[in-house]
Length: 385
Image (tube, rainbow, N blue to C red; front, top):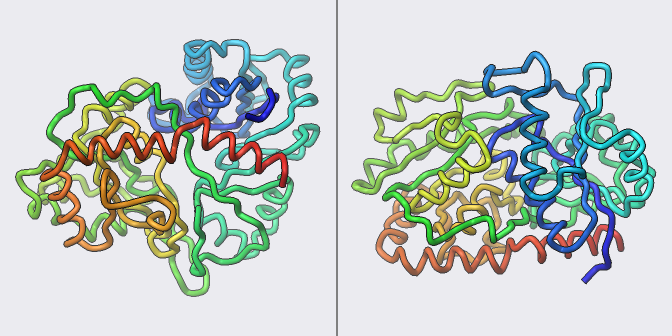
């Protein structure tokens, strides 16, 4: 095992104090701490924080700070976080002296999803690693000649991507995108919890507008989901439920989906925070979900952080293939589809052999997403590249 290191993790826990977002980043922090590293969480996005209670940007950051502090304290990391509120660059958490000492002495900074606004201010860290959690879209932005974005990416010593096997359909950028995936702290997910007889997922209808490159438009989940809108009628009596937001660029057609047989619920009500998000996944029989249209077109090998949590909870997963079948075993516990007919077959297969698929789901999480394995490999590559 790599010797004890001082590692900084960046993220969006305070920026978007929501259940799924929290799990995306906190499992890096927890996994590194469990490996014995001296880990610090620093959130320095330059963005005004979102307050779910106010339905948008908050008037200040009190709620966000309280949320982040509570999460860190819960896991014994009360003195190992810092957050910068953009108004007059106010810092919370670590003292200024301690924060600078951590930055000056850190061996590695893991910039997850590119959440760090100014990486150049952290160049005192021995190594800076960038984690591309949005493959295809990241590479398209670079290929389109967005020079500021390229300069920002190039401030890092090494680049990783959730696109574990970037296909020829993904534009070349001149970078070596090293494959990585979401680390899962398995002890936080409980297969033994009773579940409802419902297939679920948690999703954004749209996150941002489609991007265009070489006459090809790369869109969001809304495009793919509408291809499968008739699915509930084809798999009845199996119940399909989606916890979906209203969409940032295009409103979710809730009435249409309900008419087509989907159970549509509000994620702000059923899974707003760390615990309710986990409870929602663990209370599900399995997951069924589509991917972003850009992932389907680009086939980068991306796999959802959320789906990895379903696997860890021992819940079988049936998801649209994005090329990850080249790096993860599929067919048992984890099933893929590209067509409506294949989606129906995947759901029926899980229903017909549920105990076997549930057992394999947890085994896949242990083999391929276990935080110590994922993070040890990431650290070794980041320091040796």
